[in-house]
Length: 274
Image (tube, rainbow, N blue to C red):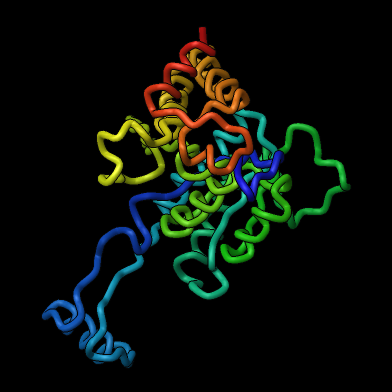
């Protein structure tokens, strides 16, 4: 239930979450650290930055990028997805986000060359059997593509900031942040969590939508190989929403909905699982 809903929305977003401007390397305007960085850039590179400026660093590494894109491609291949799209602003930030795009194509060609084909390569309108398409889009363009040409996209891989924005925009098309699951997956461990942040004003009110955390739990079950259990959870949620038994955030988007508490929604899901 969403005013922006699109039945073709079935997108998985891979967001690098250790680098980019979210790395937290920044200094307050007027601080000694900011003054030193501004002075260094002026002396060494002739770059003039206003003195009363906050300063932030945007690191983007080959290692971090290839680790992310590698996981996105592996996921796409293992789950019979059609494409992986690298989302970036490399036309402006050539040596960070432009590098993200280039490193993404590199790891695709070097490690998955026999399984992928790039959008630039010539092939007929029919995709070669067993091939995964690797393509890229500018981030600002991708926002409108997500709305107007949803069915053309499948798995998206992008830097940290773009991923934060894009995942929320995608969530809006399926009912909002209360419906979108998330996970932080590394090489040796994984943490599953709701995509939304905390909302202290709703604490203890038994009001908010639990679907994000429930679906994150389903992702955890899939991660450890319990696909049947994960499917039961997802099917239980699907049936409950189809019955128009929903929390307040979805009720205001659905005609004829029955608004229920968090606990009541969870109980309805359990009944639909059983």
